[in-house]
Image 1 (cartoon, rainbow, N blue to C red):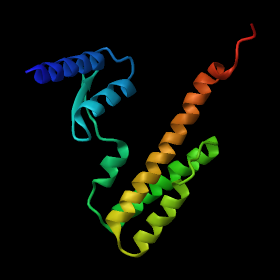
Image 2 (cartoon, rainbow, N blue to C red):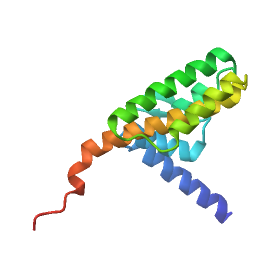
Image 3 (spheres, rainbow, N blue to C red):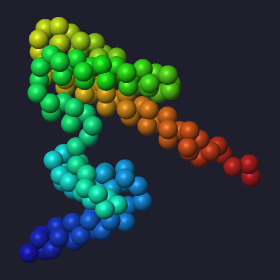
Length: 143
């Protein structure tokens, strides 16, 4: 009985924190933690999925056209992260392996690898955005 009450309390706290979340990202993260990849949540009166962009892209049918499209999207996002100076170490490796999988006709593998590369590149761009906004936090006070 105590376990059920504890679970209900955690769920209520999580839902109330989602309702008071200040940003979409905070609401998404809270809903994702609670529901996993196949959930939905409401933010500012609209419903959203807890799927990441990459999960949505990789869930399309595994064929040559979709694999190539996801590879191209990941490559473009990787280029953006490189230009920002925040490219992750393994992204290039995942792109190479994805290209090889496309050539071998392993389209699901190619899409999974391209999705991983896209995720890393997207996170690199997000890191750049965060660094630009919060650079002052890294500067020690003069006093």
